[in-house]
Image 1 (cartoon, one colour):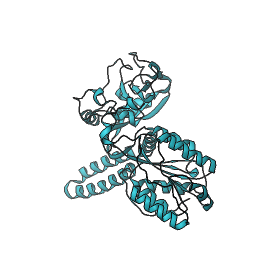
Image 2 (cartoon, helix red, strand yellow; image 1 turned 30 degrees about the vertical axis):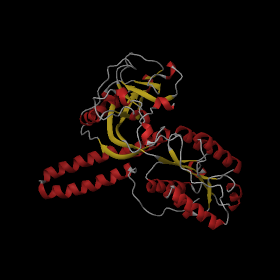
Image 3 (tube, one colour; image 1 turned 135 degrees about the vertical axis):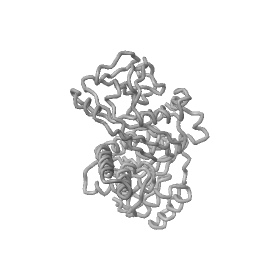
Image 4 (cartoon, one colour; image 1 turned 60 degrees about the vertical axis):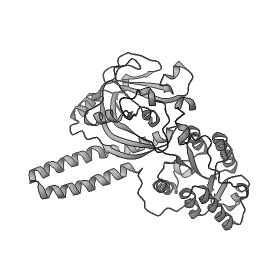
Length: 415
């Protein structure tokens, strides 16, 4: 296992860790200024209010971070969080009271994409119930970032179908609201058709939809998202408003230690997190070749930096072939291993890099461009005394939709 990345670096995507630190710093500064200018009674009120806000959200941070990471991994396109705002509800007693009264209680964290104007209304007041016959009256949410993003518009003047299926361009941002919802698990309705039936009190409706937003039973189009319909707003506690950005790249890192508990597991996770901070993109760590291929298939319209340990040679060779069949070109892959003998077969396969050196590993992820990859290839050849004659720093990614062509594509075209 590699042992590099000793630097410390802050990442724009490390939203939840930063939010807690920044909030506490702001609290200390506010307290200092308040003591200078306001009476002791008001100071106490301000302190208590700030502590109330901090305590209320601290319990959700870790859970929501895990949910967001999972949702990003399951999304077709790549998104990174570039901004986060806490939605301060000073009085959540009504929500807690209704939640405590709910029989057979279940909770979920769900996403809601909407216009900037509506997002502001949600922050200041709450959600509005949709009186629709699509999947019945209620408040519509999802557990998928891709799908929530198709409903996030710039303003209310646009018909929802104007942008509903448009693929977002590289670096384009949009805002979603993350909420905790509760429901009675005995009133969980799984529908596969359109309906205007009312949802029972404290109930929830779940519908799998295709790229047209229709139940998947109505045609054979690919499953693309979920719709959760919640009975009313007293089942919902808005927590965060998050700004997401479409990323061009993600990093896929296959290593047995990520999903199998070994003496190297903690170190592997630490190095992955440090790589994420340095790269500023999502880094997905998986333990098996099949898991890695599932992500490649799902995200084939994005660019990817691939790292892998070798494991069994036959499986590693099949992994290379499978990835290239999915992405339609000889994508570059870096294999790291403790055994120099692997170089014998690796050097015979086009566009495969090999290393046992931590510094090579680091250069690969931080200089993933034609010039950087050619320099790394030369260093590897020099260090190991072997020529990688079939190496070509090809970063074409034929399935990736560039900024110019994306305007002409929508989700339906791709699935």
